[in-house]
Image (cartoon, rainbow, N blue to C red; front, side, top):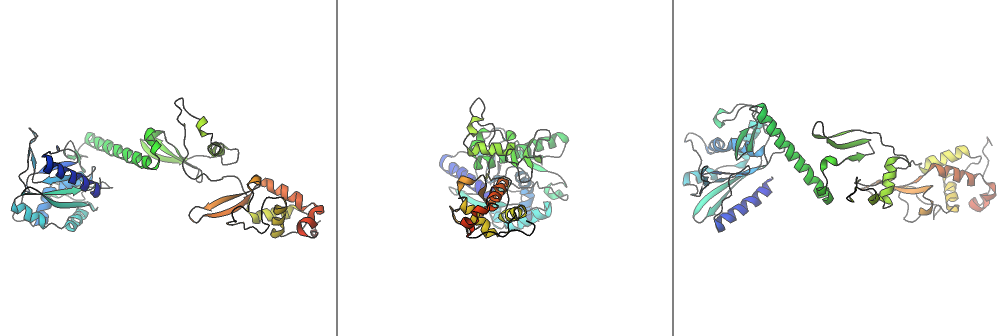
Length: 382
């Protein structure tokens, strides 16, 4: 949990304490401490770390959590005592600079931590709560800190309402790894459920993500129990299986491919782009010029397209064409693709069939005067 979530949770707990006298039981996210053990020879920061360093490491390596100071829970009866903090404790906590705490943990584990320390009051009694945010990385002490009861290389985490040493034994470490694996699975599911509400009903282990641009497939590796990616050959031709699926989606036929319960067997997410083999205008001009017996410009080639009703304007732009200039009736030969999503850049492309169709018209001398207003010049080779 992050600090904002922990703050909201702490405020709810405090409100319930004030209004109803209800205390949540100690668990993996909540701990109580009646008072600090204060050494007269230590400064406030040193005393703070003596009391809370291991707790901070444990909560940060778990899901985050909070310490409620000035309250005690009897481990046998579960009864809570809320006597509040005395003046010595309150004076010490007032002197704590959280920036100093963060810097100290950068020396302990080479990673900063996010904590918050706030005072609150119930009747005339004063308390503090200490919030520890979940760390995105595992905090591992780089040295022994005997005074803080912290060992070099030890991984501390919160489990069964107490601080545990994760790598004390193989069994303990496997337990810790399973907890972290479950957290990652939960985080993965939360991310997907926000993107696609329907993912809540789908096991994330059954989801495959295709990346045709790089010929990659991503999904759950059941052998290694991880999310991983691997290379895959994706046939991106017009009659390839990938385009067949995309065409089924575009035609609204995706629902026909379902399980017996009526749920789609697969779901493709993302921008559906045209992956047809295509030719740019400049290359189209070169190819037809090579095959034709006449000499002509790219502007004259556009006039042929205008004559065939492929375009509404013989002076159309091949990049970012005016809306409606390209006829959708002839998408077998000519169409528009978005080449940059952010700038909305579009471009006109042509199929291989367009070469044959345009060449036939260019080489028909009887149509030259109608299309160009004159006869085209023959190439020297012709």
